[in-house]
Length: 253
Image 1 (spheres, rainbow, N blue to C red):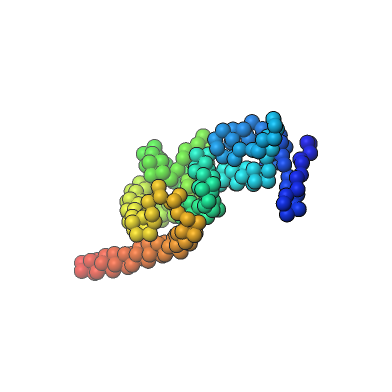
Image 2 (cartoon, rainbow, N blue to C red):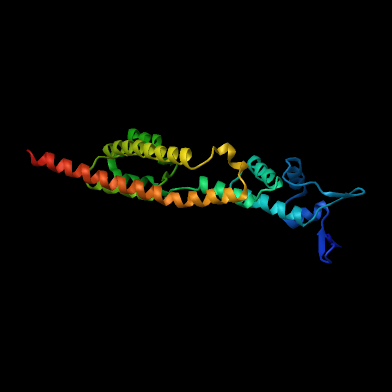
């Protein structure tokens, strides 16, 4: 392993300097990848002394930020925008935190895999091509050679329980489609409320100062549980109204 050099700074502390191969090794990437990042403007230019390009701790820190963002699922184009915001004097960490708060999943569902024997035991002759196609169309299952994977163990468990109670699978899927449509409408109403009343247009988010980004992130984190509480309460109240109305209707006969 090549040795890095140290130079004395004005305050007497030592600062490391890296040649390109040394920097790549310290960051855990290849030289080719490092040069690709340079071409994509993800890494600031090195300092030149003659024909030697020297990199410093700030370059290593930048590479670690890029690695963290890639691990979080950010695309290189988005990383370049965040890096550019940081170079314009803004706190990349605040902008990352805001972006994560906006796009963080609301659901905490666990996928479940069932093989064909388990599906046959659960649904019997109701495991038809039509019912399977409807499940796929609703976006809940993917079909594999050895069975299916459902995106939600809770929804799959509920489906099996309803079928066990004698509700036809086709009827469960029809109710599921209706519920999904209404849930999408509720989600749309919340998104419109939040977007219109609380969030700046998303193409203006990168113009926020670090303090503004931090305040907006905190506001989003406060609102998320409120939105879920309102949806849960509205559903419970709606069930109260519908059950009472149905009970009164049946009582009149």
